[in-house]
Amino acid sequence: MSDKPDSVHPGATPLGAPSTPRPPVRRDRRKVVKSCALLLAPLTMGLAACGTSGNSSSDPLASSPYDATDAVAVNAGADSQDVDPDKPLEVTAESGEDKITDVFATDGAGRVLPGELSADSKHWRSTGPLAAGVRYNLQVSTENDEGAPGRRTVHFKTKPKGKHLNVKLGPDNGTYGVGQPLTAELSRRVKSRKQREIIERALRVKSTPHVEGSWHWVNSKELHFRPRTYWPAHASITLTSALKGLKLHKGLYGGSATPVRMKTGDRIEAIADASSLVMNVKKNGRTVHSMPITTGKAGYETRNGIKVILAKESFVRMTSASIGASDFYDLPVYWATRLTDSGEYVHGAPWSVGSQGVSNTSHGCTGMSSGNARWFFENVRQGDIVQHVNTAGENMAPFGNGFGDWNLNWKQWRKGSTVNTAKYDDSGPADAARLRPEV
Image 1 (cartoon, rainbow, N blue to C red):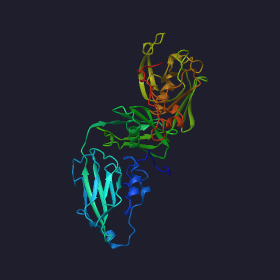
Image 2: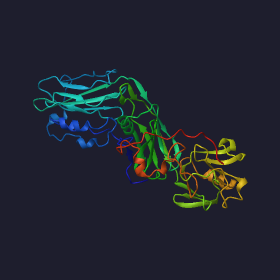
Image 3: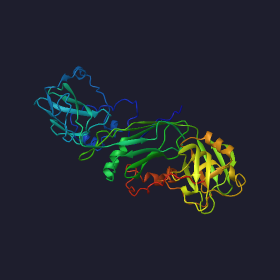
Image 4: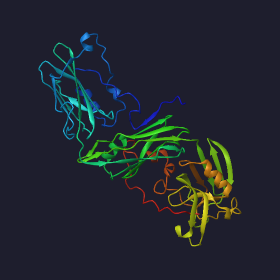
């Protein structure tokens, strides 16, 4: 167990944590509430900066607030099920003897609704949009002319509206290698920087132990999240979305998403050197296996760079037609571990054993003996790292051909975030190549 705190990105309430503490009762909250209003609806971290909860008053009345139901009016009826989310929430002190001291409204996801109190403490109005189709809890604190505190609580639900932006979170629940990125695929294209920021802040990543990480917009419909360096071995990661009901623009609201719960296994890294023609496999920093290999020959050079294992296939039929090779082949291939969408594998190549460790003879894949390929197949998992060095091929693309995310340095990666940088690239990669094997 690590003694480091969990990490939550970006600004999310950790799963299982208590709800956001309620700000203190104050006579004049105009400036305080305005400062809180700068927070986006899904951003809940740091609310304690607005004050600490509790009331240290020794006045016995402070512990027994009167019922302020008749003292204040709310434009959302108690237990209403169809409050219009496009209209602001308003609270008004109806009695001349009462003043509003505090208003605190949260939805079921723990998001705080920002608002502003008038200078005379008689009227409060929300300054941020309500989420659609969600339940709210509203707590209003008052004070009469004798200094006695009052309290009114109202529960209501906003009606669902408009079209929805749904999010598919990935990967599937399970255990992965330390290189596995988290993904978020949107049902609609989002180009507005303001809308991207809302989405990014609503995607919450919790990791144990702590990591420094960031989202990166791959294109207008897809985001990836990765730490600064590989995930720690045997980490627990949870990805959730607080986007449901959030207004992105007129007529478009966030939809629901299924959470992801991911664990990492041992830190497995395979380094394939196309110059020495040896692959070394490391487990938690220690080399556990070395094996002779062959990589891509002239005209079919293997890509340089870091690749993340995408899948394991015990049998694949590989043909020259699948990649448009000029020399014909049609081969049954066993113990194939996929590295790219375009068909680069680590696999058994018994026909090239004489060349393994001697020369590069493949059509782009990393070939090895059947015994070594089976060992590799049985000792790696999806998300583990394979890095090719000293090849004459092009560099592995960061996106569009599997997970090349780790080929961007941290500064480059953070430039793809709307939260961590002032700039982002909307170009995105070209469509991923069709699945085809490169033997």
